[in-house]
Image 1 (spheres, one colour):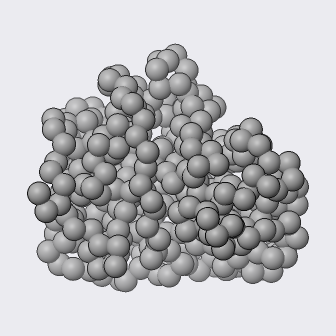
Image 2 (image 1 turned 180 degrees about the vertical axis):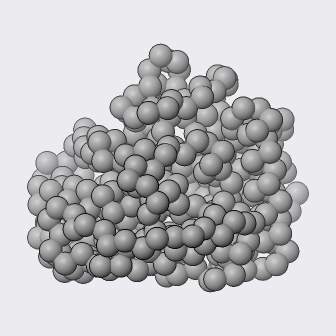
Length: 385
């Protein structure tokens, strides 16, 4: 396997707390050959329709192959107009219960449609299966309800106990089936992986998780280590990414601990962790409101691995992005390999055009510098100032 180019070190900065996570609302033509994909081990009724495949072992994608702007949406297909934009591709995520509502009964149509559309346009796809409250009830895990004083949308939300043995076993099973289905598809850029979580794919856990039998911070991190180790074994040549934002007060340092395990100590150039630079760290609170924290996170981790940012809000939501252009450009200036922008903004022509321009500039900078690079010289002013 070809190794990634190592990046020049940057000054390590102090950690700054991340803001509250907003809910996710959530050109070349390729000739594709549709093949019947073999059933994955343990799947009794695999959907017969498979996405395009062109190689038994897809080549490893370099940074420039997967860099740029991605349109992001959850649970629903993207508008066809998004696929015609001059951007890197699309990012789709959905709950496990939508993929496998009954054990062995699968519905991959959301992912397959996106892959087929991207294959026809030479674009890439990022895929994610989320757990937490999206775990199917047939798994038989022990559940609890997040306490009312919990943070980041976890209050009063049901979730399974992350270290439940039934849950861990079934998660490993669906991860394996997921990887077997898509790891050789040349249009899949990443597997965006998930671990212990509540409502989103980020790290937020309710306060009363500490009251569940067997809880410890070590137990939570061990669950993540198992997930990372398994994905490193089953990913093939695909890169991995994980959203390491929104850690709550029960384990505020979880994101950095995941980073240290997967890619190594950011202050030790010789430590490459369990996966190394094929593991991308992503944060989901991109907004100029939080520019100091965004710059700190980027400076800390960019020397070790690729980094990425997802928009915190949208110009069309009640959680409104007040500075769309400044926010999207901020991702470029802090060295993001990719930036995820919600579909709602990309359906507005002037905002879509700006995203296309940032996509082009991001890729040009990677070519110029030989990799993602922080170019921000001073923090942008907060919106309204």
